[in-house]
View 1: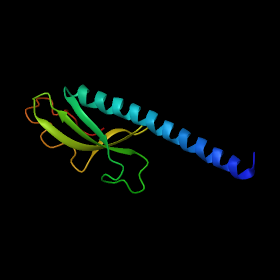
View 2: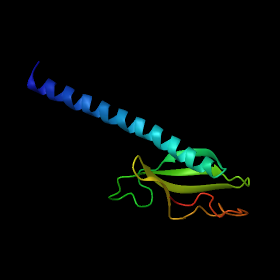
View 3: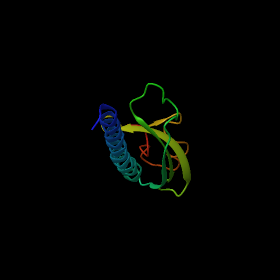
Length: 112
Protein backbone atom coordinates (compact mmCIF):
# COMPACT_ATOMS: atom_id res chain seq x y z
CA UNK A 1 0.00 0.00 0.00
CA UNK A 2 1.27 3.45 -0.83
CA UNK A 3 1.35 6.39 1.52
CA UNK A 4 -1.45 8.13 -0.42
CA UNK A 5 -3.84 5.18 -0.13
CA UNK A 6 -2.97 4.74 3.57
CA UNK A 7 -3.85 8.37 4.23
CA UNK A 8 -7.12 7.98 2.34
CA UNK A 9 -8.16 4.99 4.47
CA UNK A 10 -7.20 6.73 7.70
CA UNK A 11 -9.37 9.73 6.78
CA UNK A 12 -12.22 7.48 5.58
CA UNK A 13 -12.22 5.46 8.81
CA UNK A 14 -12.06 8.69 10.83
CA UNK A 15 -15.09 10.08 9.03
CA UNK A 16 -17.07 6.87 9.54
CA UNK A 17 -16.20 6.81 13.26
CA UNK A 18 -17.16 10.49 13.60
CA UNK A 19 -20.53 9.92 11.92
CA UNK A 20 -21.16 6.90 14.12
CA UNK A 21 -20.44 8.88 17.28
CA UNK A 22 -22.77 11.68 16.11
CA UNK A 23 -25.54 9.16 15.37
CA UNK A 24 -25.22 7.57 18.85
CA UNK A 25 -25.13 10.99 20.55
CA UNK A 26 -28.26 12.04 18.64
CA UNK A 27 -30.07 8.91 19.79
CA UNK A 28 -29.19 9.63 23.44
CA UNK A 29 -30.19 13.29 23.00
CA UNK A 30 -33.60 12.36 21.64
CA UNK A 31 -34.17 9.96 24.54
CA UNK A 32 -33.12 12.67 27.03
CA UNK A 33 -35.44 15.26 25.46
CA UNK A 34 -38.35 12.81 25.27
CA UNK A 35 -37.88 11.87 28.95
CA UNK A 36 -37.74 15.55 29.90
CA UNK A 37 -40.98 16.43 28.08
CA UNK A 38 -42.79 13.32 29.32
CA UNK A 39 -41.74 14.02 32.93
CA UNK A 40 -43.90 17.17 32.69
CA UNK A 41 -46.84 15.18 31.31
CA UNK A 42 -46.23 16.11 27.67
CA UNK A 43 -45.79 14.01 24.55
CA UNK A 44 -43.07 14.54 21.95
CA UNK A 45 -44.39 14.72 18.41
CA UNK A 46 -41.15 15.52 16.55
CA UNK A 47 -37.49 16.21 17.34
CA UNK A 48 -35.33 17.76 14.62
CA UNK A 49 -31.61 18.46 14.90
CA UNK A 50 -30.90 22.14 14.19
CA UNK A 51 -27.10 22.52 13.94
CA UNK A 52 -27.34 26.30 13.40
CA UNK A 53 -30.10 27.02 15.93
CA UNK A 54 -30.04 29.87 18.47
CA UNK A 55 -26.72 30.00 20.30
CA UNK A 56 -24.92 27.52 18.05
CA UNK A 57 -21.73 29.53 17.65
CA UNK A 58 -19.17 28.32 20.17
CA UNK A 59 -21.59 25.94 21.83
CA UNK A 60 -20.70 22.36 22.68
CA UNK A 61 -24.33 21.35 23.19
CA UNK A 62 -26.42 20.07 20.32
CA UNK A 63 -29.53 22.05 19.38
CA UNK A 64 -32.94 20.57 18.57
CA UNK A 65 -36.32 21.93 17.54
CA UNK A 66 -38.95 20.02 19.49
CA UNK A 67 -42.64 19.86 18.60
CA UNK A 68 -44.65 18.49 21.50
CA UNK A 69 -48.09 18.33 23.03
CA UNK A 70 -48.52 19.58 26.59
CA UNK A 71 -50.50 17.59 29.12
CA UNK A 72 -53.29 20.08 28.46
CA UNK A 73 -53.40 19.08 24.78
CA UNK A 74 -51.82 22.19 23.29
CA UNK A 75 -49.19 21.81 20.55
CA UNK A 76 -45.97 23.84 20.90
CA UNK A 77 -42.59 24.05 19.22
CA UNK A 78 -39.53 24.99 21.23
CA UNK A 79 -35.79 24.95 20.76
CA UNK A 80 -33.57 23.23 23.30
CA UNK A 81 -29.91 22.47 23.82
CA UNK A 82 -28.60 19.28 25.31
CA UNK A 83 -25.51 17.18 25.83
CA UNK A 84 -24.58 14.26 28.03
CA UNK A 85 -23.36 16.63 30.74
CA UNK A 86 -25.67 19.65 30.50
CA UNK A 87 -29.14 18.10 30.67
CA UNK A 88 -31.92 19.74 28.64
CA UNK A 89 -32.58 23.45 28.58
CA UNK A 90 -34.76 25.61 26.36
CA UNK A 91 -33.35 28.56 24.43
CA UNK A 92 -35.05 31.75 23.29
CA UNK A 93 -38.36 30.91 24.91
CA UNK A 94 -37.80 29.62 28.43
CA UNK A 95 -40.09 27.82 29.18
CA UNK A 96 -41.76 27.22 25.81
CA UNK A 97 -44.76 29.52 25.36
CA UNK A 98 -47.90 28.31 27.09
CA UNK A 99 -46.28 25.24 28.61
CA UNK A 100 -47.40 26.25 32.10
CA UNK A 101 -50.91 27.26 31.04
CA UNK A 102 -53.37 25.74 33.48
CA UNK A 103 -50.55 24.13 35.47
CA UNK A 104 -51.20 24.02 39.21
CA UNK A 105 -47.59 23.29 40.19
CA UNK A 106 -45.85 25.81 37.93
CA UNK A 107 -43.13 23.26 37.11
CA UNK A 108 -44.10 22.05 33.64
CA UNK A 109 -41.19 22.12 31.16
CA UNK A 110 -39.08 24.76 32.86
CA UNK A 111 -35.40 24.81 32.02
CA UNK A 112 -33.13 22.64 34.10
